[in-house]
Image 1 (cartoon, rainbow, N blue to C red):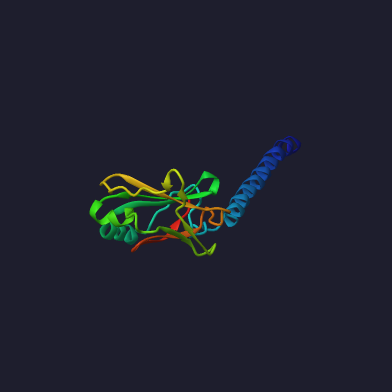
Image 2 (cartoon, rainbow, N blue to C red):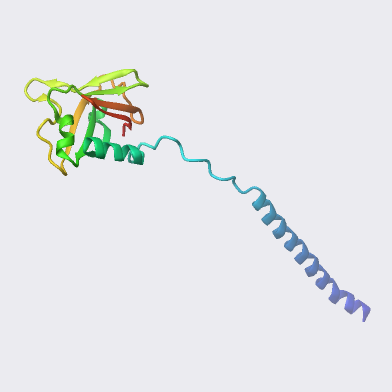
Length: 172
């Protein structure tokens, strides 16, 4: 009988021991997984990626809307980088008149590249900018010559048109 009991009890002990080892290994692997969990994600970079839209700070947006009557300011790399296009939408035509003034010479300044770009004057077309009387709700643009491509995507630039100055715009 003892032989029969011992034969019957060995598998029970073996399964019990195997179950304990299995439970311990599951517990340990869960503990190790928790201890090697990645740390908190680092903060987002200060400058947006190239495929993200440029967003001005709220106070800057309010300033351009209230003082200059424009919003949706953007600067984009165009024509394989040979041109930099500045565009804006008019909210108040009276305030935005200064941006379309033919007498004001626009400039795009890139402090990192240490350059000042100008709007090119084409023989048959004239200046590559819109200078008609602004209308509310319409978007206007001007193109700056970026010959040699000193201004790159991601650069922070300033656009100056007479008394108007938009600072820290990011080239998309």
